Length: 286
Image 1 (cartoon, one colour):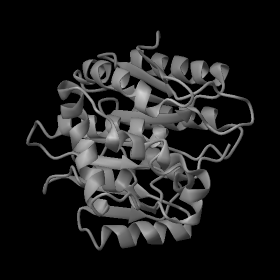
Image 2 (cartoon, one colour; image 1 turned 180 degrees about the horizontal axis):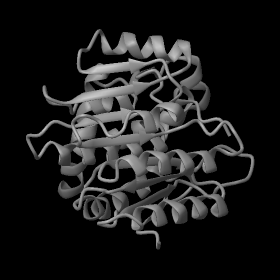
Image 3 (cartoon, helix red, strand yellow; image 1 turned 45 degrees about the vertical axis):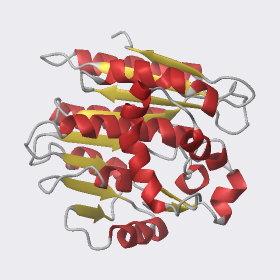
């Protein structure tokens, strides 16, 4: 598959990923020490939901458009609010015309002492990303393959932070490459928080990835922890559009599991397609 950010902007996979990102960054804000966000496959930063790519897929209509209208419990809404509060200002009242990607989601949660490193190799989205950031001195956009940059940029000087690994899965060996490059980075920085995104299409591939990541995390001292989040809006059909998304969070905030136990059950109805969605929230065995 080829997960192009512009086609899927504001879809269910973005929602799950960006809620998790905001919860991690809100947690990192609790200590005054600076942190760094590293995004290996940053994309354009801001997506036009009226453009050809977004309207062709229409994923935002069953994603963020529904979530903005959903009625959540007070507890769940309080946890999702930091994410929604970032999305709303990009749109006029009552309209949905733009969606911020991971770089702008994260940028909204940086404090003056925090920094970002954003890797984007493709010229067009890289220029769009630079334009979206408007000469932001806290964000550095790097013209570099994210797979090469990943082990080169860790550990950051801040020694605190989060790495988002969110490739397009264009190559057949992308699951293996994701595991390999994570292993190279984790060997250099075992205390960082890593978020690995994957399309949850092949059970065999996803289980192998989770197994390897869990073993790598368990092998260090003190052992790292891994949290698996999968969300499916409809049964996945071979050769059809993506309906299941997954994340592995290495060294998650201790609060994240319980927060997602509150959030995910309340997303199954607004985001489900043809019935309630399903989710998986567990700790892979090492």
